[in-house]
Image (cartoon, rainbow, N blue to C red; front, side, top):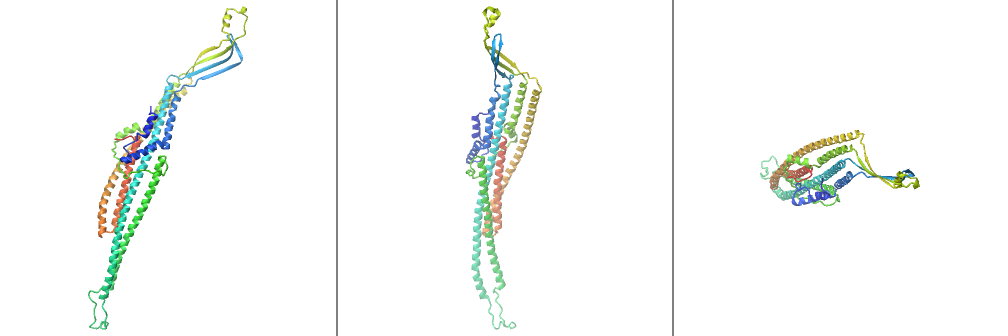
Length: 490
Protein backbone atom coordinates (compact mmCIF):
# COMPACT_ATOMS: atom_id res chain seq x y z
CA UNK A 1 0.00 0.00 0.00
CA UNK A 2 1.22 3.47 -0.83
CA UNK A 3 1.37 6.42 1.58
CA UNK A 4 -1.81 7.98 2.84
CA UNK A 5 -2.84 11.47 1.81
CA UNK A 6 -1.29 12.94 4.95
CA UNK A 7 1.99 11.22 4.25
CA UNK A 8 1.94 12.35 0.64
CA UNK A 9 1.42 15.95 1.69
CA UNK A 10 4.38 15.65 4.05
CA UNK A 11 6.35 14.02 1.26
CA UNK A 12 5.55 16.92 -1.06
CA UNK A 13 6.12 19.85 1.25
CA UNK A 14 8.74 18.65 3.74
CA UNK A 15 10.76 15.66 2.56
CA UNK A 16 12.85 17.36 -0.12
CA UNK A 17 16.45 16.73 -1.17
CA UNK A 18 19.24 18.36 0.80
CA UNK A 19 22.32 17.23 -1.07
CA UNK A 20 21.57 19.43 -4.06
CA UNK A 21 21.46 22.73 -2.14
CA UNK A 22 24.33 25.20 -2.05
CA UNK A 23 24.84 27.21 1.13
CA UNK A 24 22.71 27.66 4.24
CA UNK A 25 20.89 30.74 3.03
CA UNK A 26 20.70 29.46 -0.51
CA UNK A 27 19.58 26.03 0.65
CA UNK A 28 16.56 27.57 2.34
CA UNK A 29 15.69 29.52 -0.79
CA UNK A 30 16.01 26.56 -3.12
CA UNK A 31 14.13 24.24 -0.79
CA UNK A 32 11.38 26.84 -0.47
CA UNK A 33 11.10 27.13 -4.25
CA UNK A 34 10.95 23.34 -4.60
CA UNK A 35 8.18 23.16 -2.01
CA UNK A 36 6.34 25.94 -3.80
CA UNK A 37 6.66 24.15 -7.13
CA UNK A 38 5.47 20.85 -5.64
CA UNK A 39 2.35 22.47 -4.26
CA UNK A 40 1.51 24.90 -7.05
CA UNK A 41 2.79 23.62 -10.38
CA UNK A 42 -0.24 22.70 -12.54
CA UNK A 43 1.28 19.54 -13.99
CA UNK A 44 2.15 18.23 -10.52
CA UNK A 45 -1.31 19.06 -9.20
CA UNK A 46 -2.92 17.39 -12.23
CA UNK A 47 -0.87 14.22 -11.69
CA UNK A 48 -1.78 14.19 -8.01
CA UNK A 49 -5.49 14.61 -8.79
CA UNK A 50 -5.24 11.72 -11.24
CA UNK A 51 -3.76 9.61 -8.44
CA UNK A 52 -6.59 10.66 -6.12
CA UNK A 53 -9.08 9.66 -8.81
CA UNK A 54 -7.44 6.25 -9.20
CA UNK A 55 -7.87 5.61 -5.47
CA UNK A 56 -11.61 6.02 -5.93
CA UNK A 57 -11.60 2.96 -8.17
CA UNK A 58 -10.74 0.66 -5.27
CA UNK A 59 -14.28 0.56 -3.81
CA UNK A 60 -15.66 0.10 -7.30
CA UNK A 61 -13.45 -2.90 -8.05
CA UNK A 62 -14.28 -4.70 -4.82
CA UNK A 63 -18.04 -4.14 -4.88
CA UNK A 64 -20.65 -6.79 -5.56
CA UNK A 65 -22.88 -6.55 -8.57
CA UNK A 66 -26.12 -4.73 -7.90
CA UNK A 67 -29.04 -7.01 -7.02
CA UNK A 68 -31.87 -7.33 -9.54
CA UNK A 69 -35.54 -7.00 -8.68
CA UNK A 70 -38.16 -8.30 -11.11
CA UNK A 71 -41.84 -7.47 -10.72
CA UNK A 72 -44.77 -8.71 -12.73
CA UNK A 73 -48.58 -8.47 -12.58
CA UNK A 74 -51.14 -10.70 -14.32
CA UNK A 75 -53.84 -8.87 -16.21
CA UNK A 76 -55.94 -12.00 -15.91
CA UNK A 77 -55.06 -13.78 -12.66
CA UNK A 78 -53.92 -17.36 -13.02
CA UNK A 79 -55.90 -19.80 -10.95
CA UNK A 80 -54.13 -22.47 -8.94
CA UNK A 81 -55.42 -24.88 -6.36
CA UNK A 82 -54.06 -22.53 -3.71
CA UNK A 83 -55.73 -19.49 -5.17
CA UNK A 84 -55.37 -17.00 -7.93
CA UNK A 85 -51.92 -15.47 -8.60
CA UNK A 86 -52.17 -11.80 -9.43
CA UNK A 87 -48.46 -10.70 -9.20
CA UNK A 88 -44.99 -11.95 -8.46
CA UNK A 89 -41.74 -10.39 -7.24
CA UNK A 90 -38.24 -11.83 -7.69
CA UNK A 91 -35.05 -10.52 -6.01
CA UNK A 92 -31.68 -11.99 -7.09
CA UNK A 93 -28.09 -11.27 -5.96
CA UNK A 94 -25.18 -12.70 -7.95
CA UNK A 95 -21.85 -13.56 -6.31
CA UNK A 96 -18.62 -14.10 -8.27
CA UNK A 97 -16.43 -17.09 -7.66
CA UNK A 98 -14.32 -17.07 -4.53
CA UNK A 99 -11.25 -14.80 -4.91
CA UNK A 100 -12.53 -12.87 -7.92
CA UNK A 101 -13.25 -9.71 -5.96
CA UNK A 102 -9.84 -9.88 -4.29
CA UNK A 103 -8.12 -10.15 -7.66
CA UNK A 104 -10.12 -7.18 -8.94
CA UNK A 105 -9.14 -5.09 -5.91
CA UNK A 106 -5.51 -6.09 -6.38
CA UNK A 107 -5.63 -4.99 -10.00
CA UNK A 108 -7.18 -1.65 -9.05
CA UNK A 109 -4.59 -1.16 -6.30
CA UNK A 110 -1.71 -1.69 -8.71
CA UNK A 111 -3.33 0.69 -11.18
CA UNK A 112 -3.51 3.28 -8.39
CA UNK A 113 0.15 2.59 -7.68
CA UNK A 114 0.91 3.28 -11.34
CA UNK A 115 -0.85 6.64 -11.01
CA UNK A 116 1.23 7.39 -7.92
CA UNK A 117 4.44 6.60 -9.79
CA UNK A 118 3.26 8.83 -12.65
CA UNK A 119 2.69 11.58 -10.10
CA UNK A 120 6.24 11.12 -8.79
CA UNK A 121 7.56 11.27 -12.33
CA UNK A 122 5.70 14.54 -12.99
CA UNK A 123 6.95 15.99 -9.71
CA UNK A 124 10.55 14.97 -10.44
CA UNK A 125 10.36 16.47 -13.93
CA UNK A 126 9.27 19.80 -12.47
CA UNK A 127 11.98 19.59 -9.81
CA UNK A 128 14.55 18.96 -12.53
CA UNK A 129 13.38 22.02 -14.45
CA UNK A 130 13.56 24.10 -11.26
CA UNK A 131 17.09 22.89 -10.54
CA UNK A 132 18.30 23.50 -14.10
CA UNK A 133 16.78 26.99 -14.28
CA UNK A 134 18.05 27.85 -10.81
CA UNK A 135 21.64 26.94 -11.65
CA UNK A 136 21.41 28.73 -15.00
CA UNK A 137 20.27 31.89 -13.19
CA UNK A 138 23.08 31.51 -10.63
CA UNK A 139 25.63 31.20 -13.45
CA UNK A 140 24.23 34.30 -15.17
CA UNK A 141 24.43 36.25 -11.92
CA UNK A 142 28.05 35.20 -11.48
CA UNK A 143 28.84 36.22 -15.04
CA UNK A 144 27.18 39.58 -14.41
CA UNK A 145 29.22 40.00 -11.23
CA UNK A 146 32.54 39.29 -12.96
CA UNK A 147 31.61 41.47 -15.94
CA UNK A 148 30.89 44.40 -13.63
CA UNK A 149 34.24 43.86 -11.90
CA UNK A 150 35.96 43.82 -15.30
CA UNK A 151 34.15 47.03 -16.25
CA UNK A 152 35.47 48.76 -13.15
CA UNK A 153 38.96 47.55 -13.99
CA UNK A 154 38.59 48.96 -17.49
CA UNK A 155 37.58 52.28 -15.98
CA UNK A 156 40.77 52.29 -13.92
CA UNK A 157 42.80 51.48 -17.03
CA UNK A 158 41.03 54.29 -18.85
CA UNK A 159 42.04 56.74 -16.13
CA UNK A 160 45.62 55.53 -16.35
CA UNK A 161 45.60 55.91 -20.13
CA UNK A 162 44.12 59.42 -19.86
CA UNK A 163 46.72 60.38 -17.28
CA UNK A 164 49.45 59.04 -19.51
CA UNK A 165 48.05 60.87 -22.53
CA UNK A 166 47.65 64.13 -20.56
CA UNK A 167 51.21 63.90 -19.25
CA UNK A 168 52.56 63.31 -22.77
CA UNK A 169 50.57 66.24 -24.15
CA UNK A 170 51.83 68.57 -21.39
CA UNK A 171 55.45 67.62 -22.08
CA UNK A 172 54.97 68.17 -25.76
CA UNK A 173 53.51 71.67 -25.27
CA UNK A 174 56.26 72.71 -22.92
CA UNK A 175 58.91 71.50 -25.34
CA UNK A 176 57.72 73.59 -28.34
CA UNK A 177 58.87 77.10 -27.07
CA UNK A 178 62.30 75.85 -26.19
CA UNK A 179 62.72 74.37 -29.62
CA UNK A 180 61.72 77.67 -31.27
CA UNK A 181 64.12 79.62 -29.11
CA UNK A 182 66.96 77.34 -29.92
CA UNK A 183 66.16 77.56 -33.57
CA UNK A 184 66.16 81.38 -33.69
CA UNK A 185 69.39 81.68 -31.73
CA UNK A 186 71.22 79.05 -33.63
CA UNK A 187 70.15 80.22 -37.09
CA UNK A 188 73.12 82.02 -38.74
CA UNK A 189 72.60 85.53 -40.15
CA UNK A 190 73.88 85.81 -43.68
CA UNK A 191 76.28 88.70 -44.46
CA UNK A 192 77.45 90.32 -47.59
CA UNK A 193 80.59 88.35 -47.38
CA UNK A 194 78.69 85.20 -46.76
CA UNK A 195 76.55 85.79 -49.82
CA UNK A 196 79.67 85.33 -51.88
CA UNK A 197 79.73 81.59 -52.17
CA UNK A 198 83.10 81.57 -53.75
CA UNK A 199 84.71 83.99 -51.30
CA UNK A 200 87.31 82.83 -48.95
CA UNK A 201 85.82 84.62 -45.99
CA UNK A 202 82.35 83.00 -46.27
CA UNK A 203 80.72 82.28 -42.84
CA UNK A 204 79.72 78.64 -42.00
CA UNK A 205 76.77 77.56 -39.69
CA UNK A 206 77.58 76.68 -36.09
CA UNK A 207 78.04 73.02 -35.24
CA UNK A 208 75.28 73.07 -32.62
CA UNK A 209 72.59 74.54 -34.91
CA UNK A 210 69.39 72.42 -35.63
CA UNK A 211 68.51 71.93 -39.27
CA UNK A 212 64.87 72.21 -40.53
CA UNK A 213 64.79 68.46 -41.33
CA UNK A 214 65.78 67.62 -37.77
CA UNK A 215 63.09 69.94 -36.44
CA UNK A 216 60.44 68.19 -38.60
CA UNK A 217 61.51 64.75 -37.47
CA UNK A 218 61.34 65.76 -33.80
CA UNK A 219 57.86 67.24 -34.26
CA UNK A 220 56.58 64.07 -35.97
CA UNK A 221 57.92 61.95 -33.13
CA UNK A 222 56.14 64.11 -30.55
CA UNK A 223 52.90 64.02 -32.59
CA UNK A 224 53.18 60.28 -32.94
CA UNK A 225 53.52 59.85 -29.17
CA UNK A 226 50.43 61.94 -28.56
CA UNK A 227 48.40 60.11 -31.23
CA UNK A 228 49.38 56.76 -29.77
CA UNK A 229 48.20 57.84 -26.32
CA UNK A 230 44.83 58.94 -27.71
CA UNK A 231 44.45 55.66 -29.58
CA UNK A 232 44.99 53.80 -26.32
CA UNK A 233 42.28 55.85 -24.64
CA UNK A 234 39.86 55.14 -27.49
CA UNK A 235 40.71 51.46 -27.39
CA UNK A 236 39.82 51.27 -23.70
CA UNK A 237 36.56 53.10 -24.35
CA UNK A 238 35.67 50.59 -27.07
CA UNK A 239 36.24 47.73 -24.63
CA UNK A 240 34.07 49.53 -22.07
CA UNK A 241 31.24 49.83 -24.56
CA UNK A 242 31.48 46.12 -25.34
CA UNK A 243 31.42 45.27 -21.62
CA UNK A 244 28.46 47.55 -20.98
CA UNK A 245 26.56 45.87 -23.81
CA UNK A 246 27.39 42.44 -22.37
CA UNK A 247 26.18 43.52 -18.94
CA UNK A 248 22.88 44.76 -20.38
CA UNK A 249 22.45 41.48 -22.26
CA UNK A 250 23.13 39.49 -19.08
CA UNK A 251 20.59 41.54 -17.13
CA UNK A 252 17.99 40.99 -19.85
CA UNK A 253 18.77 37.25 -19.90
CA UNK A 254 18.44 37.06 -16.12
CA UNK A 255 15.08 38.83 -16.31
CA UNK A 256 13.83 36.37 -18.94
CA UNK A 257 15.17 33.42 -16.93
CA UNK A 258 13.41 34.63 -13.78
CA UNK A 259 10.14 34.84 -15.71
CA UNK A 260 10.58 31.23 -16.84
CA UNK A 261 11.48 30.20 -13.29
CA UNK A 262 8.32 31.84 -11.96
CA UNK A 263 6.16 29.99 -14.47
CA UNK A 264 7.47 26.72 -13.04
CA UNK A 265 6.24 27.91 -9.64
CA UNK A 266 2.92 29.05 -11.12
CA UNK A 267 3.27 32.60 -9.90
CA UNK A 268 3.49 36.02 -11.65
CA UNK A 269 6.41 36.32 -14.04
CA UNK A 270 7.63 39.56 -12.46
CA UNK A 271 7.96 38.03 -8.99
CA UNK A 272 11.47 38.50 -7.55
CA UNK A 273 13.77 35.50 -7.34
CA UNK A 274 16.32 35.35 -4.51
CA UNK A 275 19.64 34.19 -5.95
CA UNK A 276 22.84 33.47 -3.98
CA UNK A 277 25.81 35.80 -4.22
CA UNK A 278 28.20 32.95 -4.99
CA UNK A 279 27.89 29.76 -7.01
CA UNK A 280 29.82 26.84 -5.60
CA UNK A 281 30.19 23.28 -6.72
CA UNK A 282 28.00 20.76 -4.90
CA UNK A 283 30.03 18.28 -2.85
CA UNK A 284 29.18 15.00 -4.50
CA UNK A 285 30.99 11.66 -4.50
CA UNK A 286 29.27 9.38 -6.99
CA UNK A 287 29.21 5.62 -6.53
CA UNK A 288 27.88 4.02 -9.71
CA UNK A 289 26.95 0.69 -8.11
CA UNK A 290 25.09 2.30 -5.20
CA UNK A 291 23.30 4.70 -7.53
CA UNK A 292 22.23 1.87 -9.83
CA UNK A 293 20.78 0.01 -6.86
CA UNK A 294 18.89 3.12 -5.80
CA UNK A 295 17.65 3.59 -9.37
CA UNK A 296 16.32 0.04 -9.44
CA UNK A 297 14.42 0.59 -6.20
CA UNK A 298 13.27 4.21 -6.42
CA UNK A 299 13.07 5.37 -10.03
CA UNK A 300 9.45 6.36 -10.78
CA UNK A 301 9.53 5.10 -14.36
CA UNK A 302 10.76 1.68 -13.30
CA UNK A 303 8.20 1.68 -10.51
CA UNK A 304 5.42 2.45 -12.96
CA UNK A 305 6.49 -0.36 -15.29
CA UNK A 306 6.81 -2.71 -12.33
CA UNK A 307 3.28 -1.89 -11.22
CA UNK A 308 2.05 -2.36 -14.78
CA UNK A 309 3.37 -5.92 -14.80
CA UNK A 310 1.63 -6.55 -11.48
CA UNK A 311 -1.60 -5.15 -12.94
CA UNK A 312 -1.59 -7.75 -15.69
CA UNK A 313 -0.65 -10.48 -13.22
CA UNK A 314 -3.71 -9.61 -11.12
CA UNK A 315 -5.84 -9.36 -14.26
CA UNK A 316 -4.75 -12.83 -15.33
CA UNK A 317 -5.83 -14.16 -11.95
CA UNK A 318 -9.15 -12.37 -12.25
CA UNK A 319 -9.67 -13.74 -15.78
CA UNK A 320 -9.04 -17.24 -14.45
CA UNK A 321 -11.61 -16.72 -11.69
CA UNK A 322 -14.11 -15.34 -14.18
CA UNK A 323 -13.96 -18.70 -15.94
CA UNK A 324 -15.66 -20.30 -12.93
CA UNK A 325 -19.42 -20.25 -12.33
CA UNK A 326 -21.15 -17.35 -10.66
CA UNK A 327 -23.62 -18.07 -7.87
CA UNK A 328 -26.93 -16.31 -7.42
CA UNK A 329 -29.20 -16.29 -4.35
CA UNK A 330 -32.67 -14.84 -4.43
CA UNK A 331 -36.28 -14.91 -3.31
CA UNK A 332 -39.51 -15.13 -5.27
CA UNK A 333 -42.71 -13.80 -3.76
CA UNK A 334 -46.09 -14.65 -5.33
CA UNK A 335 -49.13 -12.56 -4.47
CA UNK A 336 -52.24 -14.74 -4.30
CA UNK A 337 -55.98 -14.06 -3.89
CA UNK A 338 -58.47 -16.71 -2.65
CA UNK A 339 -60.68 -18.72 -4.99
CA UNK A 340 -64.45 -18.56 -4.81
CA UNK A 341 -65.86 -20.49 -1.87
CA UNK A 342 -66.98 -24.09 -2.44
CA UNK A 343 -69.93 -25.59 -0.41
CA UNK A 344 -68.60 -27.41 2.61
CA UNK A 345 -70.77 -30.50 2.10
CA UNK A 346 -69.29 -31.24 -1.22
CA UNK A 347 -65.58 -31.06 -0.14
CA UNK A 348 -63.61 -34.16 0.63
CA UNK A 349 -60.72 -34.29 3.09
CA UNK A 350 -58.05 -33.29 0.54
CA UNK A 351 -60.04 -30.38 -0.69
CA UNK A 352 -60.68 -29.32 2.87
CA UNK A 353 -56.90 -29.25 3.53
CA UNK A 354 -56.27 -27.25 0.38
CA UNK A 355 -58.90 -24.74 1.31
CA UNK A 356 -56.86 -23.73 4.33
CA UNK A 357 -54.13 -22.45 1.94
CA UNK A 358 -56.60 -20.73 -0.32
CA UNK A 359 -55.36 -17.18 -1.05
CA UNK A 360 -52.19 -17.48 1.04
CA UNK A 361 -49.11 -15.70 -0.48
CA UNK A 362 -46.15 -17.88 -1.37
CA UNK A 363 -42.41 -17.24 -0.74
CA UNK A 364 -39.83 -19.33 -2.58
CA UNK A 365 -36.00 -19.21 -2.06
CA UNK A 366 -34.00 -19.41 -5.31
CA UNK A 367 -30.50 -20.41 -6.29
CA UNK A 368 -28.95 -19.75 -9.71
CA UNK A 369 -25.63 -20.75 -11.21
CA UNK A 370 -24.01 -19.28 -14.34
CA UNK A 371 -22.44 -21.81 -16.65
CA UNK A 372 -19.20 -20.53 -18.34
CA UNK A 373 -19.63 -22.80 -21.27
CA UNK A 374 -17.66 -20.91 -23.93
CA UNK A 375 -14.11 -21.38 -22.69
CA UNK A 376 -12.22 -19.82 -25.58
CA UNK A 377 -12.85 -16.23 -24.49
CA UNK A 378 -11.61 -16.96 -20.96
CA UNK A 379 -8.49 -18.70 -22.21
CA UNK A 380 -7.81 -15.85 -24.66
CA UNK A 381 -8.18 -13.27 -21.87
CA UNK A 382 -5.70 -15.16 -19.66
CA UNK A 383 -3.21 -15.46 -22.54
CA UNK A 384 -3.59 -11.74 -23.27
CA UNK A 385 -2.80 -10.81 -19.68
CA UNK A 386 0.19 -13.15 -19.64
CA UNK A 387 1.64 -11.63 -22.81
CA UNK A 388 1.07 -8.09 -21.58
CA UNK A 389 2.83 -8.95 -18.34
CA UNK A 390 5.82 -10.28 -20.25
CA UNK A 391 5.82 -7.15 -22.40
CA UNK A 392 5.83 -5.03 -19.24
CA UNK A 393 8.81 -6.93 -17.89
CA UNK A 394 10.68 -6.39 -21.15
CA UNK A 395 9.89 -2.67 -21.06
CA UNK A 396 11.13 -2.55 -17.49
CA UNK A 397 14.43 -4.17 -18.48
CA UNK A 398 14.81 -1.80 -21.42
CA UNK A 399 14.08 1.23 -19.22
CA UNK A 400 16.67 0.13 -16.66
CA UNK A 401 19.28 -0.37 -19.39
CA UNK A 402 18.57 3.12 -20.71
CA UNK A 403 18.84 4.59 -17.24
CA UNK A 404 22.12 2.80 -16.69
CA UNK A 405 23.49 4.22 -19.93
CA UNK A 406 22.17 7.67 -18.99
CA UNK A 407 23.87 7.36 -15.60
CA UNK A 408 27.26 6.59 -17.17
CA UNK A 409 26.82 9.52 -19.55
CA UNK A 410 25.97 11.76 -16.61
CA UNK A 411 29.03 10.57 -14.67
CA UNK A 412 31.18 11.32 -17.71
CA UNK A 413 29.72 14.83 -17.97
CA UNK A 414 30.21 15.23 -14.23
CA UNK A 415 33.91 14.35 -14.39
CA UNK A 416 34.39 16.53 -17.46
CA UNK A 417 32.72 19.50 -15.75
CA UNK A 418 34.86 18.95 -12.65
CA UNK A 419 38.04 19.00 -14.75
CA UNK A 420 36.88 22.14 -16.53
CA UNK A 421 36.15 23.85 -13.21
CA UNK A 422 39.64 23.06 -11.91
CA UNK A 423 41.23 24.12 -15.19
CA UNK A 424 39.41 27.44 -15.45
CA UNK A 425 40.06 28.15 -11.78
CA UNK A 426 43.79 27.59 -12.20
CA UNK A 427 43.87 29.66 -15.37
CA UNK A 428 41.99 32.47 -13.65
CA UNK A 429 44.52 32.45 -10.79
CA UNK A 430 47.41 32.66 -13.24
CA UNK A 431 45.72 35.45 -15.16
CA UNK A 432 45.09 37.33 -11.91
CA UNK A 433 48.83 37.25 -11.18
CA UNK A 434 49.67 38.28 -14.74
CA UNK A 435 47.19 41.19 -14.57
CA UNK A 436 49.12 42.86 -11.78
CA UNK A 437 52.43 42.54 -13.60
CA UNK A 438 51.13 43.79 -16.94
CA UNK A 439 49.32 46.72 -15.30
CA UNK A 440 52.49 47.78 -13.48
CA UNK A 441 54.47 47.59 -16.73
CA UNK A 442 51.82 49.67 -18.50
CA UNK A 443 51.93 52.35 -15.78
CA UNK A 444 55.72 52.48 -15.92
CA UNK A 445 55.64 52.70 -19.72
CA UNK A 446 57.42 49.41 -20.39
CA UNK A 447 54.33 47.76 -21.96
CA UNK A 448 51.53 48.86 -24.24
CA UNK A 449 47.80 48.79 -23.68
CA UNK A 450 47.17 45.78 -25.93
CA UNK A 451 48.70 43.41 -23.42
CA UNK A 452 46.63 44.82 -20.58
CA UNK A 453 43.35 44.53 -22.51
CA UNK A 454 44.17 41.03 -23.70
CA UNK A 455 44.96 39.76 -20.22
CA UNK A 456 41.78 41.37 -18.88
CA UNK A 457 39.72 39.65 -21.56
CA UNK A 458 41.35 36.29 -20.81
CA UNK A 459 40.66 36.65 -17.11
CA UNK A 460 37.00 37.51 -17.71
CA UNK A 461 36.61 34.65 -20.18
CA UNK A 462 38.00 32.11 -17.69
CA UNK A 463 35.72 33.37 -14.91
CA UNK A 464 32.66 33.19 -17.16
CA UNK A 465 33.57 29.69 -18.28
CA UNK A 466 34.13 28.63 -14.67
CA UNK A 467 30.62 29.79 -13.76
CA UNK A 468 29.16 27.88 -16.72
CA UNK A 469 31.12 24.75 -15.74
CA UNK A 470 29.89 24.92 -12.12
CA UNK A 471 26.30 25.30 -13.32
CA UNK A 472 26.75 22.35 -15.67
CA UNK A 473 28.24 20.26 -12.84
CA UNK A 474 25.41 21.05 -10.42
CA UNK A 475 22.79 20.43 -13.11
CA UNK A 476 24.35 17.04 -13.84
CA UNK A 477 24.20 16.18 -10.14
CA UNK A 478 20.51 17.11 -10.21
CA UNK A 479 20.07 14.87 -13.25
CA UNK A 480 21.50 11.95 -11.30
CA UNK A 481 19.25 12.90 -8.40
CA UNK A 482 16.22 12.76 -10.67
CA UNK A 483 17.04 9.13 -11.51
CA UNK A 484 16.64 8.21 -7.86
CA UNK A 485 13.73 10.59 -7.22
CA UNK A 486 15.90 13.17 -5.43
CA UNK A 487 16.73 11.22 -2.31
CA UNK A 488 19.75 12.23 -0.23
CA UNK A 489 22.96 10.73 -1.58
CA UNK A 490 25.71 10.15 0.95
